Length: 320
Image (cartoon, rainbow, N blue to C red):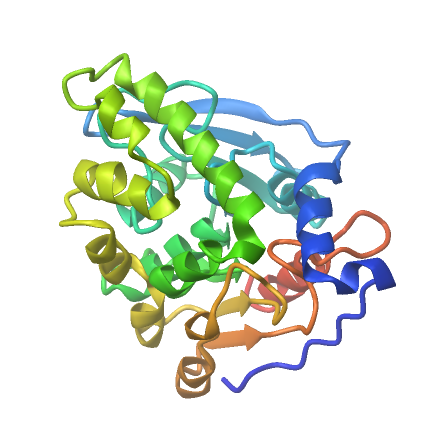
């Protein structure tokens, strides 16, 4: 599909990408949503926690929500998405990736941008309940990359998966890393690094022979973290091998389910390779919106409902 128009005109303050990113990440609050936690035991002995919220009436439709790097099921971009879907008669299953629900996961591995096996396990679990005929997937940032990779990497996607949305998707992980390592993004990268190191220290208590103090002290950048932990824990040669194999951009041509990517042009986390215009023009199932403003997972509008949340609901409504 050709690139779609994106008539998004935020309040003046939020025409600055950093302002939109910071406000959405640190100051936005979403009330009026009740979540119920379910623990999903995985075949490899690990677990993920799922935070469910429900439409007012019983529904056969469910949105699987995937958070970003160091996120969780209570981040406003997740609860805001759940709330708007619930009000539209769609249940929501907010996935907390391994180690992201407030409790260290059991295995040495954790989560990463390309861990589509975990998304598939969640979808199979939902189907086993027998409640849902229509499943949609919405991923934010890292979760958006995972959603697009899942749909396009060649596995058999259950027929119940009817549509997907990715917001602020780093379609090229190396390109996104390059942006995050620039001075303009120092504060974000520093915050991510500190969160990741804190989790690594918690995991060190379980695996002291695999994670040493010296290794942790050598983590100065996000790439260092991916070289020393992410790649080694998940079977990749190094960080660059991880980025190459897990970037969703290479899989977009294989998507056969209606999928929408919303990446703002002022997203400081995304480089040129993260805007898949050619892929969207070639694949009739892939839609792309590139609003001028929005920042990274920002898209602020009045009424505490973001532009990306409204567009997401409108998009999936065409296919459910």
